[in-house]
Length: 214
Image (cartoon, rainbow, N blue to C red; front, side, top):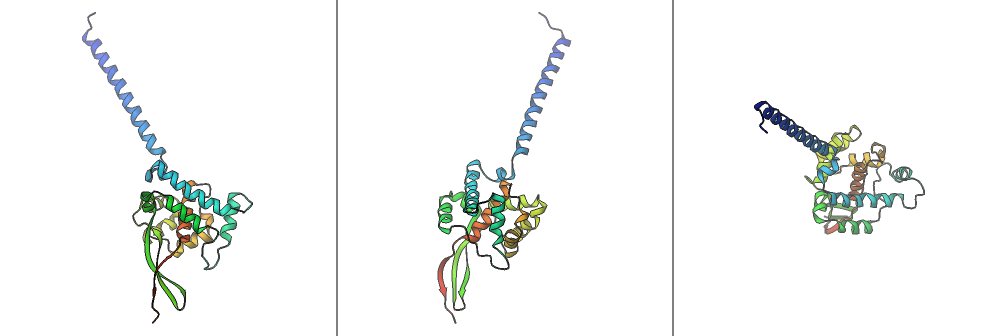
């Protein structure tokens, strides 16, 4: 069968249209896949997100333990204990927290926390150098926190403060403990923000040495 030039041209045009359609479909699918990623998935691998979920589950479990209500009411009851300037975290087992953090992969741990040195006064005559957990400056969790809060009006001040301080200064702790309603307890991402903040505040201080009292 002899094909005319016109038939050949039509076949080539049809094949080109089919190829273009397939390419466009692939591009749309790839674009949609990227758009469907949550902000958490942008910063962490699936296995790391599973570990982060363990942090959240632990904190939730500690807060609702022996509460007798639903999660929202238990959270409200928990945060009601903090008022004024008494922000010593209670109700979260330090020993169980230590076991949990020890079980984290070193890479994920170092993307959330660093070990910081400072001083702490236990009385007028007792000042010591200590080591404690603090947020990792430049870590992926800190970047996630800043990015997430920048797209959320309720948490904009929380994120801006963290970005400027690189830590959890008192104003952020006040917002969490005295105004927890700024956080959405149905959001997995925001429960993670709460959990890491509480775990940081609840971490043990390791005494390095006592400072002589002159």
